[in-house]
View (cartoon, rainbow, N blue to C red):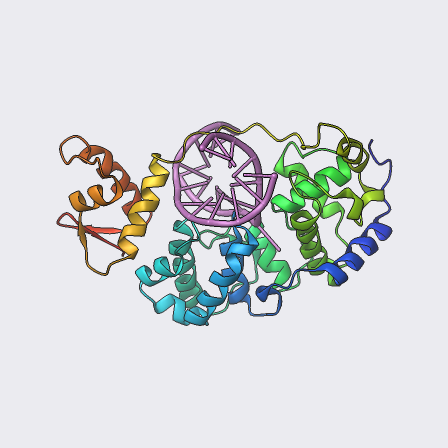
Length: 303
DNA sequence: GAGACGTGGAT
DNA sequence: TATCCAAGTCT
């Protein structure tokens, strides 16, 4: 069922009212510091809120401002990133801090163009900083908002990001409400309008939602599970990606450089310096290229 | 535009 | 136990 027309005012009131009562208490929501918001947004890329909270607090204690982050050695930032995954984000954030100090007088830039030029900052992150830190009236589309608005507006996931962003813009409230609006959509997606079992019964947007009838009718039946997009599932253990993680993990544990062959044995008990050297050197090359490790005379360490 | 890029909790 | 999933970005 597609909504013929949407009652935006009612919808805005419903969600913002729900948010007032149900918002998650998150540390980066208690700050106006654009640098702190930048840190949180980079950490939150493809990473659950629950796992970011503690890391964020520790990171901000260790690097309270952009200058302290910029002047720290890359290795320290990579260590602080432990447990977060996507380690290149740590390198990018460190580079971004240096660019902010060098090119922007230590202030996170406000223009979209300047934000997008920072390494690791794409459309989502730039918009999030622009809206949350500086109050510009911009939509934000993360996986939550993409799912929530897809269901509300058309009863199904968007086929393209372009359509998702256009729709998010269409649903925007007044400028002063926009930051809370974006946050509330994300909270709703994380807590109620979830990927697998949306709780339409407790959703403030049921009456506006093109998907609610379908989901509610599915509840009693065997088809409780929401049909999910088909994704390729390749084995993770044993993948390149897996071993990259093991190498970084090994190097985090020590300040002393480790010989490549020793590293091979550390990450894989069956490693043979004869047969596996090429395989390992390919992975090492990738890590060097990403700025995640240094290798000198066969000895590897964090940069 | 498809694939690479981590990690660990939830189901 | 295996698969899904997560405040995306870059090439």
